[in-house]
Image (cartoon, rainbow, N blue to C red; front, side, top):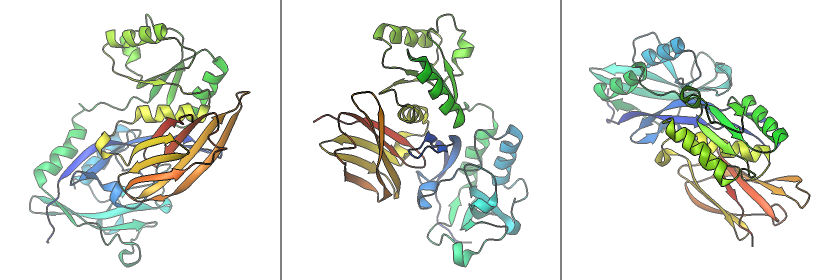
Length: 341
């Protein structure tokens, strides 16, 4: 069975959750992605909103079974010896669609081939096959070491809990409710002094409201540093819940920076600058506060962008005064304040 050798690895990845402009919610999912020849395999499969079977929120027994299945230590879950490589981020129903492939052994090597989009028990390779993807031949030792590392218990689980510190209790309550809806735990406090280190280790991020002064922020940072807990800090840009959720989602992104799809966002001089590393759908949403601190939301772009840097014109009404821009792909989020003219 011929196939050129490819390198195999694993890396943390995220399906970005969020509160969308139309009021819908998108659930946050952490998972382990497959890195083939140094690049996430998911990025090679068009613009796909999907997660691997190695999701952090599945029960440990099921996670272990998924790993052993990929190691060919268990029966294939689908007829014809096919394995789910990526599936629906919201459920496990094959009817939603999944990327599947055959996994074979050739001597000590593992081979992934015949990738297809599958919506029932049988894959139609002629109609729904990914003809430009694979086959990939992985060296056995590298393949087993990467997947075996997920079973040794040493890998740190994602910390999907956020500590919210601010002066506006009603806003914090709405923000906490929104975060919990998309699968992120949230607690509200004014003081972390005296909190045991074990409790602090549950947090992946701390978000400060605009009214929190530098002295209080520094005290919180010292408390976490003294406890030996490394967290991401978020300086809330404005009292707008979807905007703050997007900031927190970005802070919780554990994927390596060099393997992200959305890598740059700037907003100035009436246009947005966006950079992506592979073709994907990008949505740009502008949030604006008027003089009465009412929030105005504008969808300014929603389309497929090719890899590279892009300049997108912004409607002057959408970014008038104090305004902010959120760029979103299925896997990542960036937030930027619009520079005033």
